[in-house]
Image (tube, rainbow, N blue to C red; front, side, top):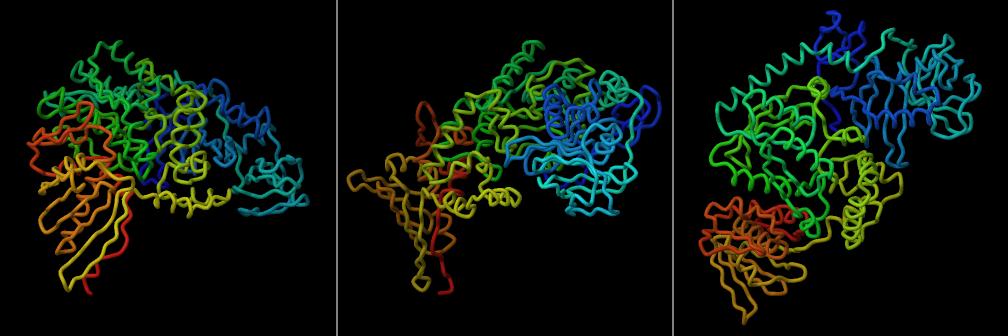
Length: 632
């Protein structure tokens, strides 16, 4: 979740009917709504059965058995709004007010609830949770209150939340118990009174109140789709999630039945795969399957766990199978209807409504619901009475790869509960990989594998629990498959690189991959040597993986070194993902149980740039020492 947003969804609340609105005017009472409270981007979603159960258990544990009915009354509309935090955190919104924050503490592996000013005020007014009356005037953030500063009972356990009130019974903040009668103020505000609503809220009322606005949004979206595709070939990218389900329905209404394309990454939740097939069968639509099969697991040993700043998985498991499926099924330009929304991420905020794929130039993505909030989507699905992916009701707010590094630890905890065997399989493979590199198991259990370079808040958390973060990062990046030493003698016009690939390489296989560089390749089995001659550079490689490279210019050496090292990595770690096959302009690559570069290869180097192994291992597993001192 980004730390800051400059955009926010325009969402409102009708104070008369007590329902959320996606436009200022209520369709039930015709009155004007007020702006709904919440942190940007205000991408509100409904709290479903599992969410409500989790909220109830957490609030009761934190504040007592009566507190939850005050915070989130049964049967009413409860919204969740994701907010920035070190792990998963949601504002809980009831009656148009933020009641508090439901968040997952990754260090203690437990859920917590901290009431906000409205939630705290309601708890005091109803006497539904312990609170203390502060005797002294102003309470500042981080003030420590002793027993003489307040009246009232406090919990004996450390870190429990306690509501603070002034002498008039108005909430002024929230503190945590220090366990010895002292309290530390962690949130403070001006005296606040509660704002109860007299009318009961419900989702059926919310749908009816927004019906006119939903119909208008539908007309805009279907009209946009019809204009954008203009009779061209079209398919709907269907992930199994709520947004792509809306995009699918809008497409059918706009231009009729069109094929669905599902990218099965090989790490999709079983419920998602089942839901995709169910939707296709129910609607009678063609399903194009872009399957990565076991590409993720084949790539894991060489590339390591994917990370937010090391997303090789997207190329291997998404781009490659999608490109293969699109090229196989469609000839020429084709439009893909997407369920992307701008409130999901900064990248999608910047993306236009129609965009040509930089990876598949013949593919144009169309995003008809780009400007919809999650509340728009859910209200529309409720109005259409469409069955959604069952995982939403199981506590998942996003649908996709179940071990995606973009997930929070709270999501992984839920995966362990719903799909324990899947998680155990991943855990075994990941732990094996980190043990080989001398990393502590905490690196996996705390989810630190989700970054190659830890962000500040995660690094602070790791240091608090005693992990040597610098040592971990050094081991992570210091485990090199290729080591290179550079040297230069500018006065003689000689620039050199000497190095080696750990564990050696098959020279016959290397010579095949070196064809793709466009250089002159020679292989002598008798001498155990492969040579490569490029413009201005010459390299020799032995079967033990050692190599030497010479060039007359530092730029030529740099370019030749990159080509040589990427070819070494491809020769040893190729996982048959098929990326090179997709992009070769001369169809000079064949994969049939093994990879073969044909003699028709003209050395355009497109496959080298398209190769995930070459791209990501070159960044993560190559150590270069020394330098080219051109001033010497």
